Image (cartoon, rainbow, N blue to C red; front, side, top):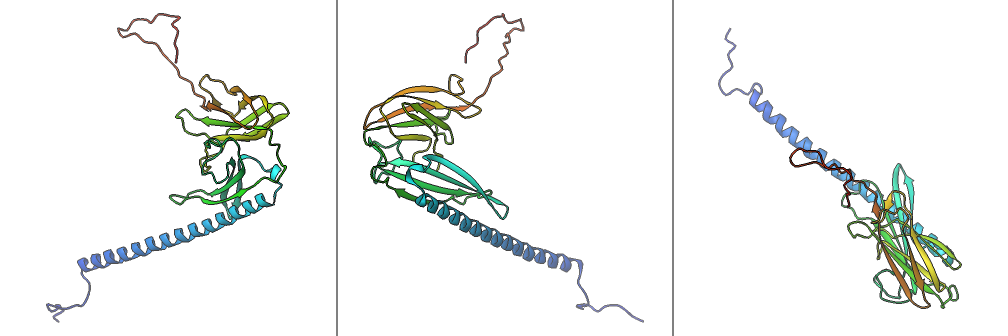
Length: 265
């Protein structure tokens, strides 16, 4: 019996046709997977932004309902875990002049008039997504502060001269012992600790963050400053992580270096 298949018959796929079909199928599946992953990522990002916006709004509501004089000036942070995602709520409370665009450490005004509160919410794996931000401006109640006082602006920068946030700054003087954390990069005036409405007199300003030192290697550097009524007294610090350098002296010609050589950095 003759079982030969006639020329031009389409009785089955050849190897080439099978490879082409699998390639096209792989491309279609790959595109579907990419589209699905992108859609899920967008949905997750939108949900996280919605949660962050609610957290920022809730924090500002708490600020508005608080007693004005009990509000913490400077930077405060808190972590709120929701569905396994740790959202970080950063609140910067800065004294500014009325209608000012800069923070107290950058303002040319001699007296702060309102308190600007900015809340930024971040979460892990944000990528290029910007933090969710909400802000409000509060006016101090009449008689809340003595007008016959002065102010202290403390600016803290790192070794690269960039503003340094989250540094505890303590102001100690006549009847005053306050500690404020410098504002972070989300603030109008980053790296600033502003002490408003303090009595005239001489004060000491001290930094204190574990692991940091000034240019002289002092872990808790201190400066004295005088405050007069109606003026802003300013002081600045350079502050960064402590480090050490191991120096080994060697001779160019292979000899033994002299001992008791003073090395300065």
